[in-house]
Length: 363
Image 1 (cartoon, rainbow, N blue to C red):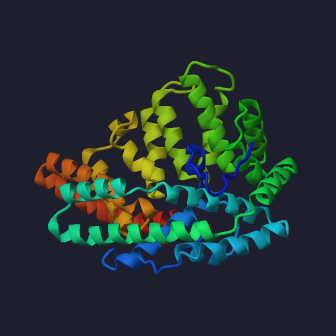
Image 2 (image 1 turned 30 degrees about the vertical axis):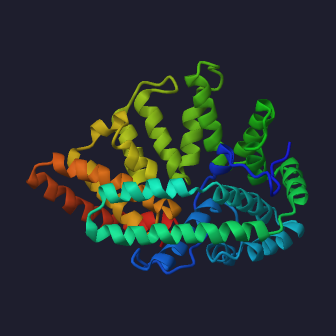
Image 3 (image 1 turned 180 degrees about the vertical axis):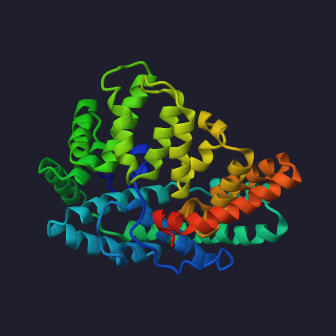
């Protein structure tokens, strides 16, 4: 089984897309705005790549090279480090290669659908700016896809190093390898080893896998570990806090449902800028513990984060979704409560905006 997909038969996989964590740095100034579409999209890419490499220590310039469409140079630098036994650089090579896979899957139809959605939801004063970001995205993807084709990935060497590092007990390599291991027992073994080593992404994935197994009725083994693993992972991964909240609110692991405590964990994840926390406020049972003004305020907070580029290359999709949601929420509130929600959103931003931008690597 090869974890790397040679050029000419690249294909996207769900496992490749499910990269944990958030980034090392950004290279564009945080104050860059969507009005400067090309610079802003480069900022979005820098945030996106930084988020994808949060848990590996690599030179900050690597993120800048990728955002600047200098993929061959980034790969060359990472390869030199990896060849000198830098396991983090080797993991970064795996993730960069699969990022390239994803670029190759972008289509003109997707861009057309996004443009139609933008025209549907945005007012005229925002539309042209967002369409400029969409054009910048299309230009970047075309250039980056070509750059990825020119990059020299040493597929065999990368895979060999990944396996050797996992066998030697490196938690990051074990967790990375697990994503591409088809045998369920071997995959679980790799995750368990990484989780026992205190590696938060492995703890999170192991909890999710066990939760899915329970929901599918496949097994009740290790159910009692789900909540503990999510708590451990949630210390550094805001997304795990949200899944912990969802689990607590539904009693997913056999414990009685506790919506109020669940909401506390979810709101704390919102303070970290975690996107799934804002989405959960619209559909999860723990939302009943929040007032309508609070839910609306947090969606407005999420919108400000997005405008700062904190959604990375998901900026446009997030803009579309949040615009639809906030329009509906604002229309449902009486004028006095709407003003309260907007005032509350300002307070949230003042108190937690810097924290969220730091956590999402967009400051």
